[in-house]
Image (cartoon, rainbow, N blue to C red):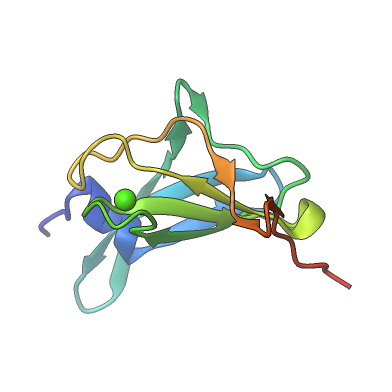
Length: 113
Ligand SMILES: [Ca+2]
């Protein structure tokens, strides 16, 4: 089975462990049944990408329209949305720090209840 590129794997399937608050990606191959490879931690700088108080909701999108897919991560805590800009390439994405999506000069948030 041919393995997809790392970014393609990230694009095909992002999976989270809400319990740990760590964002993982799984390589995905299409055969008669979808197959997942071992999980790979998404890194932010030199550390695993963690979201405080867990339940991260990742999404891949070219947020700043520079042609490189970025990582958008919703977080349960405070209902904020993180943007990790891709400082690598689409074939070898790299993420460092994040900023929160803003509205009217403040961190945007959606209340859970
Ligand atoms: Ca981008």
